[in-house]
Length: 214
Image (cartoon, rainbow, N blue to C red; front, side):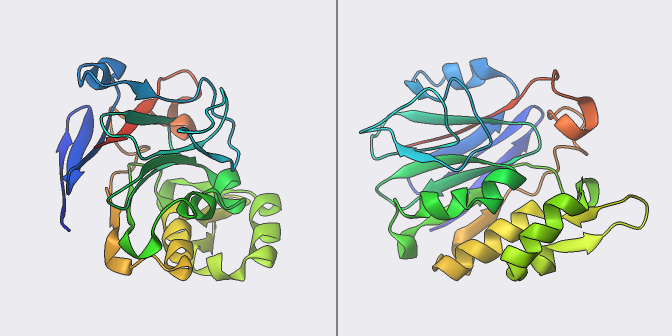
C-alpha cells in the first residue's frame, strides 16, 4: 500500500489506501473537511491511549477509533504526531519525550493488527535541533539501552541530541511493525518558517493540527 503526500505552505496532506492524513497550522482547514472532529480538550504529555468508541475522556494523548467519517486530531509544536492505520482502525498519538519514554507508541499499537499497521510520523523537531539534559537521557538509556543509536552528546551544551523519530521507529519495528510500513514526513518544525515550534518560539505561537480519517 503506497503512502503519497505533498507539502503545502501551511501544512501537508496525504493518503494511504482509503485513509487521509495530514496537518495544518489552521484549524479551519480541518473544519472545512466537514467531518466530526475528535480531539482531547487537554493533552498532558502522558502515555494513555483511548478507544474513543468506548471511552473518551477530556484529557489524554492518544485516541483510536474504527468509525468511518470521523476525523481524529492531535495538536503538536515539536512533539511527534503519530498516525496509525491498519485498514480497520485509525489512531493519532501525541508523542514527546515523556510519552515516548513511557511507551505511548507501543500502547497505541496494541489496538491494531500489527502486521497490517502503517505508521506515519508527521512533522516534528529534528535531532539537530533537539537537546535534552542528562537527567532526562541517562536514566532512559539505563532503562532502554536500545535507544543509544538515537542519542549523541552535544559538544556545545550540557546535554544530548535526541532523535525522537528514530526512537519511535526502532521500538515499533521491535514490536513487529514492518520496516516498509513506517513512513516519515521529513519536515523539522524548528526549521520550517511557518510551523509552530515550542523550542524556537515558546508556548504561545500556535499548534500544528494533525489529523487522520477514513
